[in-house]
Length: 288
Image (cartoon, helix red, strand yellow):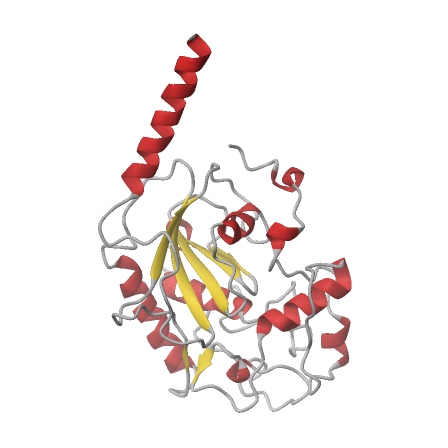
């Protein structure tokens, strides 16, 4: 009887936490799209015990995204913006999600949150999912093609720049063939460096080398380039080459012939379709 009683208490407590997240104006799923174009979808993501500050419904995320959009546009020389996901009523489409595990410091990207969010339906190959979270982490942000995270407390004061930095990683940069690439996918100067200066640098944007991807040609920028590329295709093709994952057929556009790109890096990865091959033991550091 005691065990049954404890189970009931735990169930009721868990249900009350879930119920407390259900608030007016909040969406737990990606809403119907205005079009079938590539889009960046935003999520307000909390860990199991993280306090809900309602940033998805109180206008906080919309304000931050506006700052990101304006600075990105300025950095392109007022030429291009990022493509964001909007609802049919014209408002920014923001979802809410709460992990069923506790927050942890260290690697979030390429880890349990990617897996969990894909299980919740955030797995469209034509979307980049960018989560703002109040959960703790040792980094200001982390991202790769498909999923990324901005840790609000850690990034405080530089949220706009760190968000653009991470969204560039989401678009595949710096590429293995990007001139001056170091420390994985970073550069010595500009937004992809530690100084986070508000400039892309010629190696990233409008670099004139047709054999290596250029940011201006990403499908996630508008106006869309006449020769666009999908960063997920490149990342998954390289990940499959290095790790044998993810399952599926991925193609690097034939025009990109740069040897460094085709060779890839030792740690190339792509978490798309992670739910199809991930093993529970991979996430043992994420406490339930």
